Image (cartoon, rainbow, N blue to C red):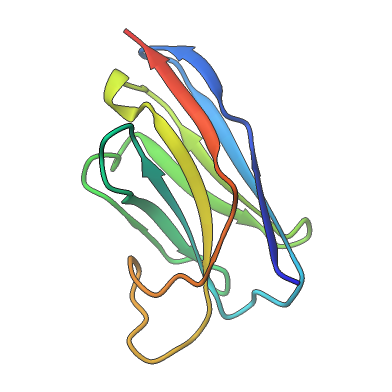
Length: 124
């Protein structure tokens, strides 16, 4: 059974930093793309960042480029999202997701497993 468990969310002032973690278990993720998405109240879920488990290639949404960094720890089967220079508009529930190899898979589409989410609130 695949499980993705996020942690690290919380309340932070604008300009501050948070580090989210996603512990993955239940199968081998070597060929997966691991992604972070977020959903703010009243808005649709949006892509934030993704990383290829094998090779470590990354891809970011323009809104977070230069401020957020995604990384993975293969030994711990964990994906991290380091968020710096946080803004009020970064406030959302952040979800970790896994995207296994499949036709049509892209950096932002095709994710088939999701975590329960962790709340990030940035006060201005």
